[in-house]
Image (cartoon, rainbow, N blue to C red):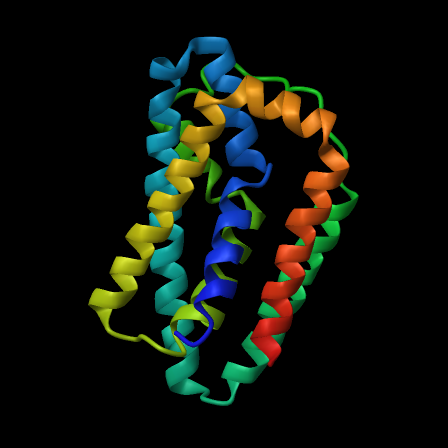
Length: 194
């Protein structure tokens, strides 16, 4: 992997920034307590792992059948990351999301990943731009899928554990936090194209 700093900053921002997984995890922990909300986070882990495994298969197939797709996918990945940077920059603090009954289950966390476009696009962009150009073995793709799903799990658990403190900080300093996260994402996008 040629640009480890860009990869790591992209992964950290993508997994620790506010999104459906983190906000629902925080909401579940505030409603049910950390222990009772952990199964949602485990469901997120398995859902993200499955999405990453499918993205790996899809990306390798594209690279093998259409070698010229590499540069196109880098541009698509960079465009998606820039879009994320813009969305992050202009986002405003949300009031705590309404929580439906039983959102703290394993199945809720698992199924959310299959209707969460940000996770699907994130996995395709990550696999196709940062991983498949350098690694194509089943072992390496499976390892990255587990590691990236685990980083997502850690992100949702952090939001659950420190949700109220983190939420207050984000609301109070949301503009500064948004600018820092946006600039990290822009750095990631630019480094993909250089």
